[in-house]
Length: 151
Image (cartoon, rainbow, N blue to C red; front, side, top):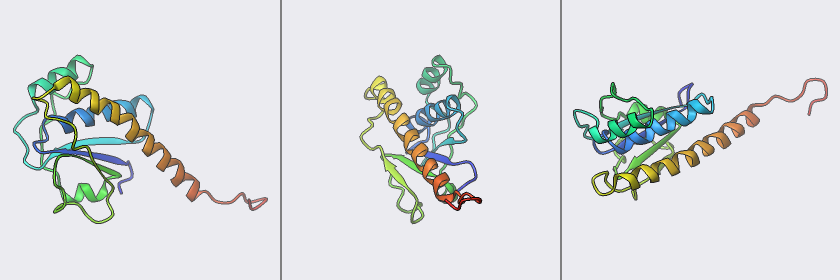
């Protein structure tokens, strides 16, 4: 795992759902002052982010205009704290032991854009809370005993 824990969000084209999720997650991490990052990728990347997604995020104060969809790699999945898939079969790329969440029930942005945004916005804080719990466990597990008393 990388020094800065990373969540890799993956959708088929890396241009809509994964971009929304990564933007929402990055904003939450920044607001909480967390040493955590998120990336968006796809299995078969589009040439550009969905204009509808870019505009919606811009209206919410999240400027992703410089983001370009890209292909997910096995290496980044191996280094990720968590991988979130939106209806993608990552089996050929996913190394053993990597934590994978499947958010396959999130519909296409063409079906109901507002519902997609709402579902993703509702799940991002839950994922962030899981990271906080894991982080507390990692800190507690690595704590050295008190030198003077040994407890």
